[in-house]
Length: 218
Image (cartoon, rainbow, N blue to C red; front, side, top):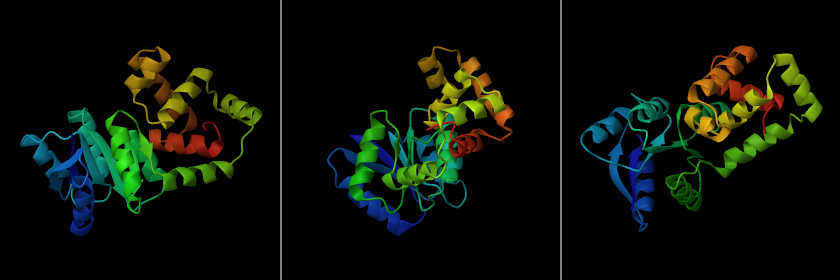
């Protein structure tokens, strides 16, 4: 049984999602909350969800603050963001903070249920609408291999840093990247900071946005 906490401050939306989830044999809603603070209170009272399905925009502690807090204090809990906002900036920010999935609120029931199941077994998921939006943006910025090499040279980005950048864009944590590339966590952290310094951006979300626009990553 996959245990879920719903964090959504619109009661009608929350009730609709709860009815759908509770209609499934292997899913159950064990708690409901209006914001991040209420989710943390449920956890402190002993609730042990597998997944928190959270709106990104809530009064008090919003979804982004919540996923960051859960990643720090309850890393075993997987977070799926559910939002009306479909901008790539919010997507990048959510995954950078630790979300495992991002869905827009008009997502179909079948896709929502698939995302929950997929993320529960260790996957990550970006809903089809947002995935296609990002594909369309990539098509608007064609980049040949030569162009990428020129850009890497201009920014002084190494092949190893490019590998790290690609994995960051796919939502992997520093520890997961270190495991994949057979590096130490500290080395990966150094590569991440070097990329931020070399590109002149403020954080990882902005780094990924720049990399996608420039064609450095696919």
